[in-house]
Length: 242
Image 1 (tube, rainbow, N blue to C red):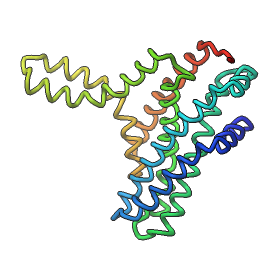
Image 2: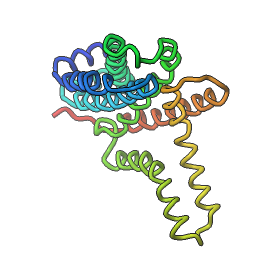
Image 3: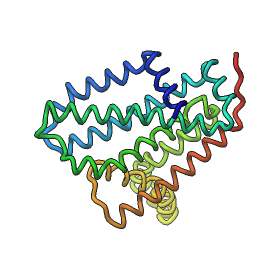
Image 4: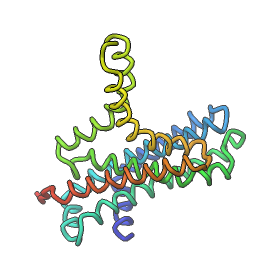
């Protein structure tokens, strides 16, 4: 916790938090005030949290590459503690902005805000979305991964998302291609994406049932594996103080 507090304090002192504050102000003044219903508002809150977590993680990871921060890493008994501290500090800043956004929304546009029950039910999924964003961004930072490793992560994220367009093109222009082969690749990408999309959607419209719990469990397994990969990369990455 002390390391998390130091990171949050350094982030505030660096004035990079002004970007989060500007994003917060834009969301309040130009987005929340123009939404027509609670579903759209909840979707905006979740998207705000996801994007803020990505940015904040990137900035804190960049600050951790500075010489004074590298000394902290070298003084720790395990580099995993540093990764967990980055996730904790970025998550705390993101969650703080999310809660302030709820307060501001209730004050400005109470009629279009989701109910407190919806907010409470969606909170576990939202926290998982935030943690997912921080872990994915960590694997795309120079602090943790090499250039090649970052390209691999980017490809794993973008290729499945673009696969639906590829499938449509194959079906239209190359009908002779084996449909079973295409379906098999789609199933692999689907296994990676469906749980994550389900968790994200659950944060917008929470409704607990056996299927949603299954998707949450699968997503936790996937993101735990991703974190393990990032930890291995970080453990093997040489760090030098200039």
